[in-house]
Length: 113
Image (cartoon, rainbow, N blue to C red; front, side, top):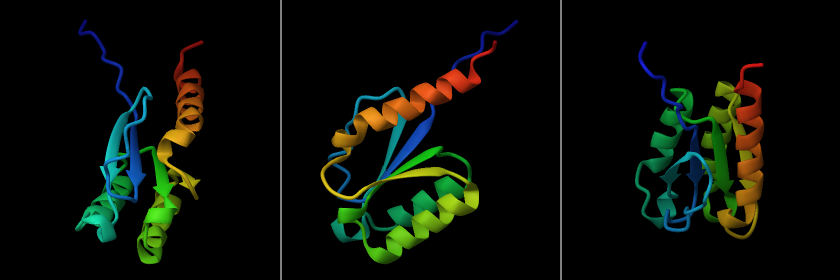
């Protein structure tokens, strides 16, 4: 019988310039910079990833994100029923603990009894 690999969940960090997205959590981090900071088309790719089921948590850096970009990502999250975390100020590393707690709760929910 082939061995099953545990698949890490994907987290999208949306906004900013994409450089400060280094958090230490047990997940795959996908960075989608804001168009204002050189992320040409990255919001469109973020929405496609959310719609395609490739992301299960979205972290929104709203201080470094345009209104229309925010609206598009939140609309996609609500449509796909993807959880999102709003970071109003500071960096995403300040919310590293919240992200890890989400991942821990997710792992407990999928463990066989």
